[in-house]
Length: 437
Image (cartoon, rainbow, N blue to C red):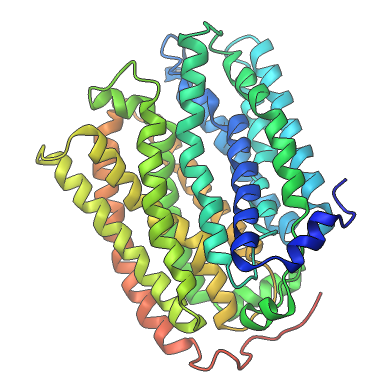
């Protein structure tokens, strides 16, 4: 089903860029959108009636799933970067099936011991993004295609929360059965979209000429790549860690943040706010496709990071001065976070490989970034829960955003200065060893 070339694949090989791009975006967007139906529905509940070991149960559940998700990212550094393309589609379905089974056991296991199953749920899901991205990277249209993929995790998170809240409030589904039930809703469309994804042909010869050939990377090749670009990667990883912390906080505790803004009992508020964020992020990050020169595009992508940080600061200032209503505040804050966050997925690493004429796969860089990013988020949650201070998620979100935006802006300026000195002007000249696995 997922390895034999079909008439769909042959037609896509001959299709024009518009038709091809639309097909890829629909397939990738749909696949990852459905994945969120198995990852995020539990966050639609507050679990405020349960306290364990003096800690709110939702915090325990979030930490448990993020721990599994983080471990998955470390595993994915090897698995995703080394996986042959022919196994990607079947692997996506297998990983998500494991996650849904974990949600079933989460519903069946007594509280509080069911938190273990959210760790199991997060463990396979962390590798799905890299497998989906593998179908899109290394193409002339990669930024546009990846922006469409990233739009899925912006919109889907809010949509899934709305579905979860509706199941509980309208259909009276039990809080602990709600995540599994939400997953059932997405099974059939998931299989359909993965089948569409599996029909996408590999990059053409022209794609490889413009963006370099993409191939699995073994352990020694990954280490050699990191040594060649250590300074740039360390700076980029620091920014990504900070972005992951603040973005995950906004995402996982969205219910509590909206309540802090005075907005309650509106299940659709999550989907509405993320819809506008998604549109803005697609416009900003999709424009990178117009830049043909890989060096210029890589430098511009670093500059784009700072644009998001300025928007974050503006949103926080608007809230503190009470000049922004809750919806504009959440939309602008989300836009400021997701512009740089999505830029890593669409442009920064993609054009870094192309500008330095490196072979390999973007999956290695994304999983390296995600691994340290989520590890940082776990560290923040552990620190917060070792203190006896009552947490105001709204204030934590606002002041955390201000601090992270200021620090990240300084790092991005230094990175831009470094990149201007190190990225070759003629990107047709190979810089790194172009060894093949």
